[in-house]
Image 1 (cartoon, rainbow, N blue to C red):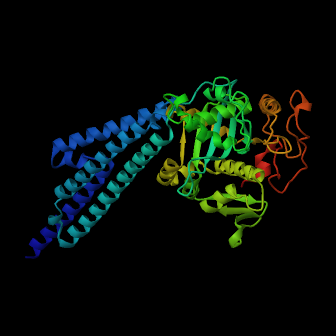
Image 2 (image 1 turned 90 degrees about the horizontal axis):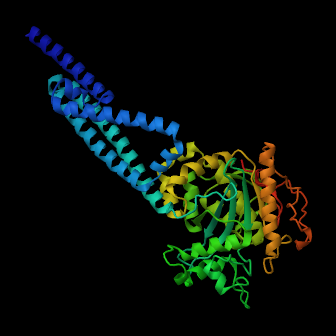
Image 3 (image 1 turned 30 degrees about the horizontal axis):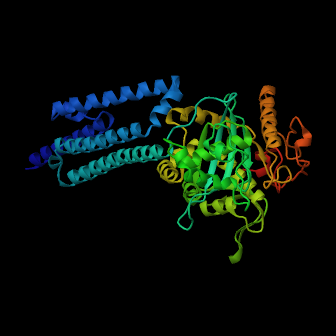
Length: 486
């Protein structure tokens, strides 16, 4: 009897070791367990799938190293990511079935009661973990594909304008308690296509008599600029103006956006490559998905003055989405022009702090939040190029000009002087690139004067404000210094 029990025990030990070996081999080479012992056709098929996946991954890696822009464009396409997600889901199901089959051919009943139960639990945990990780990856690919399909609608111009890309960024105030859409913030960003050095131009939303270029269908309606006697024809009303004249824009998906792009060209003299529309009501979710922003608060900002809720001044404050949103939007106890400067500080903070580690760790949340918050005319094929530029921009100080009093009177803007300032500021930025320096003008420097200094309505000199953003910030500033983004 003792010999029989000894033989049984040895058999159980051997069977247990064999089971763990099959499971381990299956984790390294899916299908190997079946190919060695069990359903060999299934094993060979699984091994073939695994080998193909490894080869595809190697080829994709090599192509990414050789043609990064192209590969980023391919995988930034919504339909590619959704197709990839479907394949990943199928793979997760297949791996789950392989795990069950591996457990079966390991014959846990022949391991003895205790060993069999432990083996079954371990196999189940490994199978669930592997399948869950694969499903998560598929879910992330699907969510990202959906977000990219919504965000990157294409339609923009990839043609460089004098070696630059010019992007119109609009902050939309659309929401359930608001009728229609009026851009709450209007910013033009001009980026060097070679160095990534950026210049930000802040346009007050209350600018009047906005000119349209000759190519705009609205130029025929307003040949002398968008003007109304009741002063209601403001820059931020042009979005609705475009929608109201949609018949002038046949085949255009969003006439309001098109009208705003034309207005930005008329104001600055810059041809706009792309637009980015950010829904400020969803912006809070985007910042929360990033994990918040860390900024210096250099002036007390009222979030809700009626309830005595403020952001107090202080360095290195970590703000959640709600705080960042109202830091950028608040006009209580301050001016529209101060708010414009804060908005540019938020842009700079996002550029600095949205890094690959953040994207990797919060990938799904960011994709979902961005899909509900933003849309742009940047095509997927251009994402790789602009991503590289953004990485270069992060390493350089950002030059900023806000067209606010005393530089420009929004009620009666001198547009020739404004366009001259835009051209001279870009020329100054380009001169820094030619000099090969990473420096930028400090807050004590002035906006570069146009070729006809008398065209400016008043002096643009501002005293230095080393504590933070400059009130009425119409200086050419290094935002890294002005905003003190940490």
